[in-house]
Length: 221
Image 1 (cartoon, rainbow, N blue to C red):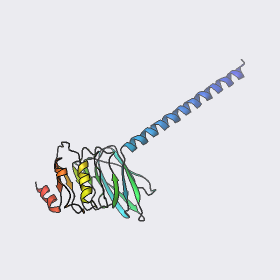
Image 2 (image 1 turned 60 degrees about the vertical axis):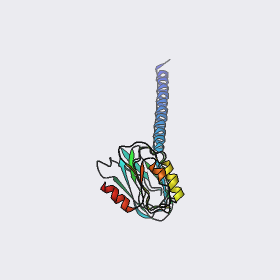
Image 3 (image 1 turned 90 degrees about the vertical axis):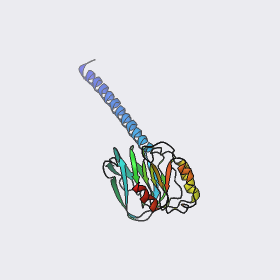
Image 4 (image 1 turned 135 degrees about the vertical axis):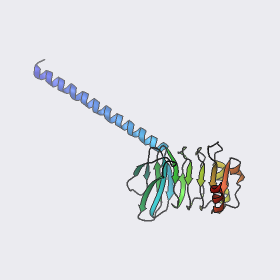
């Protein structure tokens, strides 16, 4: 083999090797992206809202959290911190028109979620087992399931549309685990507040709060 042929053969071999390397890198990148997407989906919390104008969500925990506001706007990501160490991280958004949007919150270690006044019509927090505090005041929820939220100690669903039957169903999904602090569920302002069977909750170690006075008295203990 003369020198030009040898150089040509070496060049072809190198090109083939480089091509293989590029393909391997692309495949690795695709696998990493897929794994990250699956991990994100494992921890996503989903909610449907009909809110308009300025809305605010507060999150606490560790690491970072990302909110997809569900209206084709850019996702918003921020670092979050433990609630007992500092104030919750505030996420603000402005909906330019009133329409039904499905929001998604991604975060592996979100322990505190406050989405008061968002006019929520549905909420799925089943993927977040780390959640300890959940605030849902003044929305339009007709049902709520916290069966998977085994670390929850405070749930405020005041002023929603929960009937007695819906509240009884909710009580049935509360965990009965031992926790380092007392467990409270705030239910005032719902259609079924006065007719629900609170013993379903109390039998699991939860204290239902049926009025603002109940909350005030709790804070005085």
